[in-house]
Length: 188
Image (cartoon, rainbow, N blue to C red):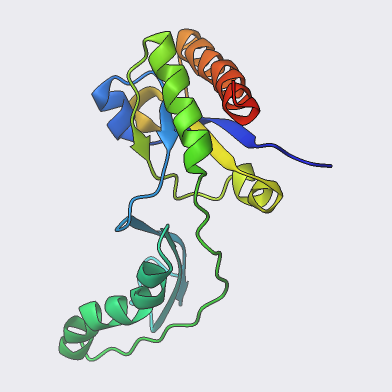
């Protein structure tokens, strides 16, 4: 099956969109983008009245730059080395997995921008950072994402909420983006 392009409409966790009062935004790369999240802490002993003798944490680093991802472990360890020494602690790092950054297609992002412009919506390009379906579609053809602002920038949590009108705006951008990309690919 040939895929001309993959669009993904997504509820956006980025507060910057909400703060800028944007109806929809095209996802894009930013050369110095990076974010890290500690998703798990395991302490031994795991007791409220005991100082742990061992702490393990799972930290996920996301970036659109392989160079940023490559440098992160060493940069992190160098950043905490002084505190570790002062506290007489040791730390180590083991990489559990690695996901390659995936860029959205300029062709698709341009179609999203053109669609937002046609609809009179303000838009901006920003990195996604998270692994979405679009990452897995990238080997099949050009990809792009359309972010829709969430209330208070909250996404992928029970508090996630978008106004129905914003969902409609994002759907309109998606529809117009497909038409725009079709027009461009046909050379019309």
